[in-house]
Image (cartoon, rainbow, N blue to C red):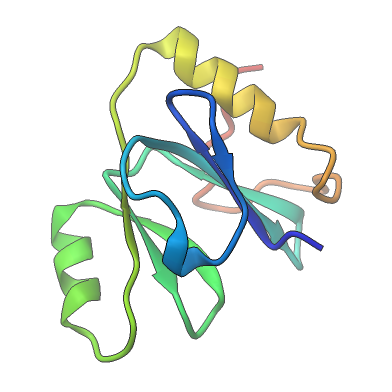
Length: 115
């Protein structure tokens, strides 16, 4: 069972240990969600691994600095701005990823992407 998958601007994906995820050019992260089947995190400047919750969280610069000031191990991935066509393509790949449960609803802070 894959807990998450990171999608990058060059089309690569990563679903291994969070501590070894490639750092740069992140667009979208999909992960399992106990409430909604799957969750997609996108549109952030930084993606930080929450060790306690075992999930990724999207932050702006101030949020990332606050994350780094807390005790414990850290992993920060850096997002990238791209044109809408590429972002929509990668988001659709994540939304249609067959390795994750079907979505039952969207989370409150989840970007709903293009339909």
